[in-house]
Image 1 (cartoon, rainbow, N blue to C red):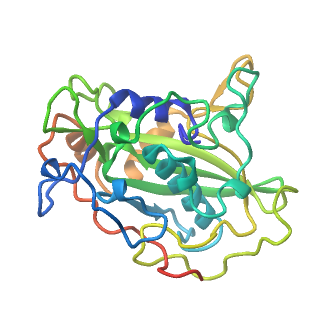
Image 2 (tube, one colour):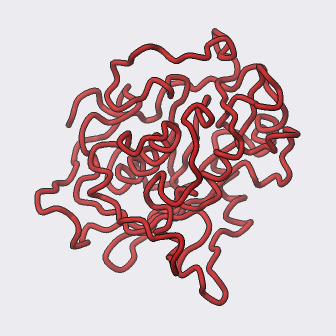
Length: 297
């Protein structure tokens, strides 16, 4: 799913080769090119010191419990590994809880070709995609399907920044054109992710157990395996099903994107404002929301 789910995400990030940070922070990220020498937070790379994940959800969905927990862990893992160019930086349990990626050279399924990070994508160096700011994720819906659930997760690209290559000392949003700083389509401030997961998949290890304590706290990443008895069977932000289907199922509609825009913590107008132009300082990353416990629970 991520572009992760769709080729759009990684291709967009690598193509931008810019890095960003937070907007009205106490210090100017432009003067802090090197991350701290080390961090005490488990599984949180130094290069992501100026970046955090923010989550919200629709009615009846608690981001700290149930299927929301593996959804958070999956999407966050995908980006952490991508932005550090290191597949080993996924959260504990990620590999055993996700299907293998389809080969992009074959008759692949859209929901499998980018299901794991750094597979079927262009080579890149970690510094070129070092992020600043935050990603606002919103779990729009979680609905039952045969042997599992289907979730739609909104993702605000407008708040992810990279250092600009065309304007030294400036920062640019992932949602903007890297050369001009303009947003070509007002709906480009958000992505829509479709993720399907199951508690009945035969690939779930026999020893897997449910996570029954609330997964929230001050840490930006979990210390232990929080995937529990869940398995991610498919994820995409564009194509679902066979690539050679007639017609292929590009499931995201303008209405879905508008719905996601409205679900963001910032208004659509504010999103455009944040995403447009070259910034001296990107937005403050704030604390992780809801964050993760400091110790395994």
